[in-house]
Length: 117
Image 1 (cartoon, rainbow, N blue to C red):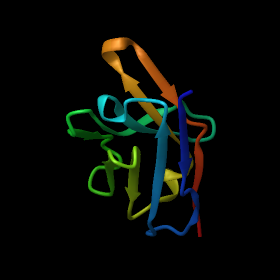
Image 2 (image 1 turned 90 degrees about the vertical axis):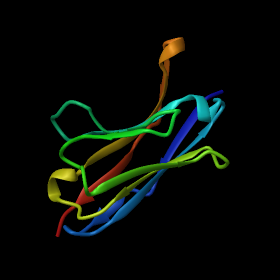
Image 3 (image 1 turned 120 degrees about the vertical axis):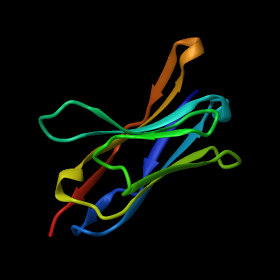
Image 4 (image 1 turned 30 degrees about the horizontal axis):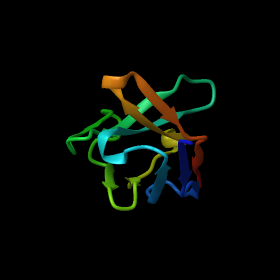
């Protein structure tokens, strides 16, 4: 049974930092691309950052230089370090595991990040 469990969300003031975690189980973690997505109220879900099985990373333009995605293969966990947070970063953040060669992907249930003074 595949599980992706996000944690670390909460309320933070503008300019603050948070670190999100996504603990994965039931998958060959190192073989998957792990991504963070977000969905703000009334908007479509968008890609924030992805780390591929090779370790290469990509970021949405809106978060480049502020967010960092990383993973701990031994702990089967992917992280999203978010710095210099802005009110427009407010959203539910979701973790996704993708193995394109097999056409499979899994989603977590999300964690809410609210950036407000």
